[in-house]
Every structure is written in C-alpha cells, then in structure tokens.
Image (cartoon, rainbow, N blue to C red; front, top):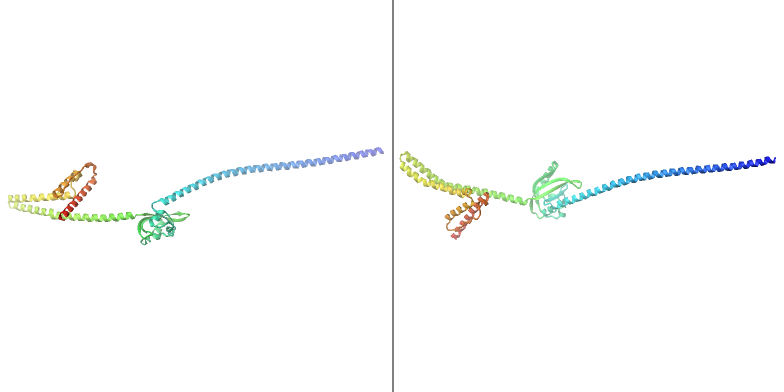
Length: 354
C-alpha cells in the first residue's frame, strides 16, 4: 500500500515536471513566434525602407535632371533677355540718332513717342510734343491728308506723300511724310517718318525761276538774232537780188557789158553778206573753238576785241595746255570771256562819258 502511494507521488511529480516542461516549451514556442514576427516585421520595415530609398534616389535623379534642364532654360532665357535688351537699346539708339523726325501715333492720331529730331524740327520739347496730336503739327491746308493716309493704310502697309508742317513759332516747313502701321507695346500703332525738304523745295523753286529766266533770255536772244538778220543781212540779200535781176534783164537785152558791170558791183555786197554771217556765227559760237581749241580762240577773240576797242589795253596770257581743258568747259570759258570783255567795254564807255 505504501509502495503504491510512493509510486503515485512519483507519478504526480513526473506529471508536474512534464507539465512544467510543456509550459516551458509553450513559452519558448511563443517566444520564437514573437521573434519570427519581429523578424518578419523588421524585414518588411527594411524592405519598405529600401523601396523608399529607391524611390528617393529615383526622385532625386529626376529632380536633378529637371534642375539641370531648368538651369539650361534659365540660361537661355537670360541670353534671350540680354539679346532683347541689346536689340532694344540698338533700336532706341537708332530711333534717337536718326536724322529724320520720327513719331509714334495711336490710331486716333495722338503722339505717344517721338525722337529728338522731331522735337528739333518742330520746335517743341519732348514733353510738349507727346501731349499733342499729329494734326497740331500739320498745316490746315493738309488736314484732309490724314483721311487719305488712314484709307491707304487699310489697303497697304505704308503710304508716302508730301505735306507742310507748322513749327511752334508759326513758321512752316515742307516735309516728305511716310506712315507705316505696326504693333507697339502689343497694340496697333502708326510710325510716321518726316524728312525736312524745305531746302529742296526752295532749290526747286529757284531752279524753276532760273529756267523761266533762261527761256526769257533765250527768246530775247532769238529776237535779237532775228532783228540782226533782218536789218543787216536781209538788206544785203535784197540788194544782191535786185542787182542779179537787173543783170538778167541786161543779158536779155543783149547788153553783156552792162550786166558784167552790174554783177561786179553786186559782188562786194555778197562779200559783205558773207562777212556778216561769219561775224554773227563767231558771236554765237566760233568754229575755231572746236577745231583749234580754247587757247587759240582766246587769242583770236582778244585780237578782234582790240580792233573794236583800241583804247582798251589788253594782254593775253595762256599758260594752260589745251589738252588740260575738258571740252564742255571750253565753251563755258569762252562765254565768260565774252561777258567779261563786254562788261569792260560798257564800263569804259561810261567812264569816258563821265
């Protein structure tokens, strides 16, 4: 009985030990599972960290590439802005330095910009000019030209015409005007270019007066030549005609001797006519000017002048070579010589009368 009791205690003790071992194994199993779970979580955490690092590296590389492109674009933009500034400065320099007057107008004709030459041309300061309309500068007689410009600019890019402007002091100036439509600061404007042509207009007027005077002198010279031909050569030809007709009648009457005497008497008249024609031709243009040249013609002319005006002392000096004088200049020099000697002769006569 006691032995059974001891065996039972031993069995219970072994059972208790077994249970303790089982509990230890269970605790160890739970610990291993917790460790495995922690390891798994750590692995997942490391994997997420690696993926995050990979995404960060990829994003960093993309940002670096974008930053590099942006730096290139910024540099290109800077270069473009620099080129625009340089071009703008060039245009501004040209706008200010050009010798023509430049005005920029809006479509209503108000002056929004002008260059220094436009201010000088019209006598206004910059501030005064940009506060005006272009019609304030145009003479009232040319105000209708604005409508013409507007109509033409609708058909083509530019239009040109002459007009008259009025300065600040009221004086006028003739200008050659050109209008061009273009965009200024993003809106349509008109560039007006004015060139002062007053000097050319005055020169043209003087040339017209000179041409009129030249025509008058030419007509006067023609009338003088006609009178001289009629008064001198015409009478000589009439006398020669009558003499020849008389000689013909004498020949018809078988009076050869009388006809010979008549023709002999007419011959000097004919010679006089030839001499008058020669002198008139020499006055108009001596043929020797083309054949012998200006030097020989000058010497001959002064000899003839001496015969007509022996009381005037003359001396000819011609150190120039004939080939050194151009052909168009020879006639000019001869005309100057004619006019000068004619004036000298007139003055000499006036002094003698005085």
